[in-house]
Length: 484
Image (cartoon, rainbow, N blue to C red; front, side, top):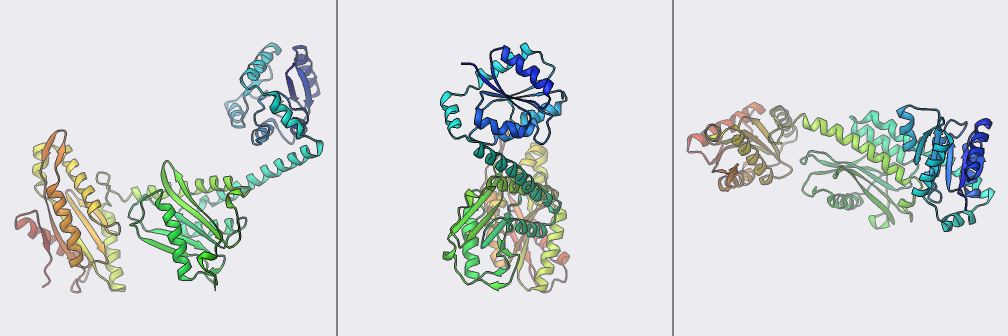
């Protein structure tokens, strides 16, 4: 049986030349003069292959090919695009549109036939497939399909552009969230929606932004939603020990229902490069199948792009405040954080503690084993410090072999527990690098924001003095600042 070709060409001369040549080579040929006509004939004629010009009015060859490949019923039909265009970008778009081959119009008939036969062998259509498609065909349904595809392409384009316009707000998180809620609420049915941006900083606070369409949330409902949401996020990333905050973007009339009244929900972790970069959630009182939403996949794809940009922006900012060797915050960030925490506890009285650590005889380690060994020791002590302290504590490399810990909402009696735990962990750790073993200890000075400190600098000085006493009195110990 002769293979059936749907030939699409808007030039009468070229159409006749190609049609006659293909027929002479044993093919059955049906023709169309534009992309819209060709799309309808796919269902009426069901060809084995489509051979189409690219440059055509209204719907060009790229668009026709993309339309074919986007519809499950017909996407198996192979497409060859013919063009006078010869730049790399033209071939790129041909491949992106899903075409099996991209050939020059100047190709001779013998070579064209060879390529068509090779494509037919590689992408054969069964008679059952073609008969099933033909049985669904009628002129009316073909036109409906065409209209639907054209509307779909338009909607997808508009949809994508709306999301991409939000890229201007990457460094204004609250504004970005408000814009996202405004956009999502225009096409997604929900009673409550949430947005969460993950941070590359494991110690950062996890914020769930909530939109209730202008209504206020009772505390019980707010708590249930945040628990439900972050429990799902925990499956992708261990954030159970992190700080949490729920921010209500729009406040107004109190909602009069409970969590159990929310009949439908969807919680979507957004993953990129095997990392959790954020998540969104929708809850509604109506019975809603969110996954069946017509543009659900596009929405998730565009949200993923937005969240990826936001994560990378945050990651860049985060890396600028990190120490490259230890992965702790750097000295500049410590100075900023100490000042901020000190001022905060002056405005809203509460305790916080500060500890300075110095690796004992670190110069001797470097001189004896080399600087690479010293780097290994410093990195290992930093890692032990991360495991010894809470995620709500802030850890820094102050300079050289000195590390600093800020412990918010912690008095000196509470701070001594993780500080001593770290000292013991280092003392008991078997350091080994390139087969060379060593024992290392640390000394620490500990203080808190006592009332007699007038500035953050005085508090830091007191911790430094306590550290000096720890080293002077034998090392491998913790000394507390003594109030005068």
